[in-house]
Length: 212
Image 1 (cartoon, rainbow, N blue to C red):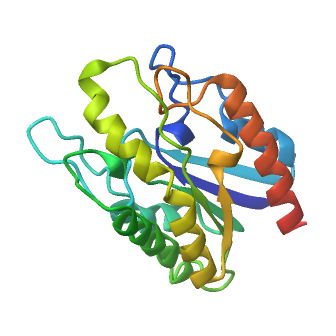
Image 2 (image 1 turned 45 degrees about the horizontal axis):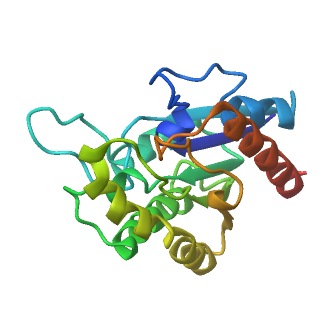
Image 3 (image 1 turned 120 degrees about the vertical axis):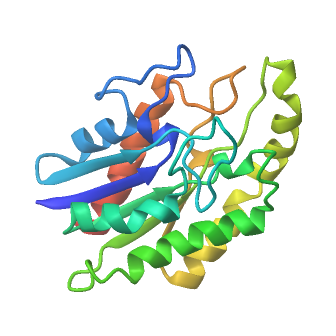
């Protein structure tokens, strides 16, 4: 049995842009990935709404433990042994209040990958790592959100360039999700069901080639 950990945010959790609920297990890309890889694989879903690479929200209404760097080491220990780890984060780092550059976000992603590479819990059998640059931010029908979307859209188009460099520097695998998936029209961030299915099938082929 080969264990595949999928570490990400709401698009890994399966947030539906239609109603804010969670896509069913067979629709979420992680579920599609499980079906694609087959019974000899165990796909572990570790998606969380609002998760960032390294920064937490502040204020009275802030959700706790949204920083991926705060919890990844615990998750690695919890789910070991691992044969493959996918990391797809960065979209939530684009929030206006964080005021982060693309370079800073990519560095946060790099540090997550290094956490996997340097984990004492995985040292005996280090997993393969796939760093995935998130999809581009699309349009929105919410006028009160346009300030966020304008700056986030521009930065999201530069994710792949910087994430590719991180992957090259660390000698790990890389995938640009924006070449496969587009976010829901009008909502601009989360994936419709057909996009989850497309991504899960594509990823299944890729991981299968790497691990088989």
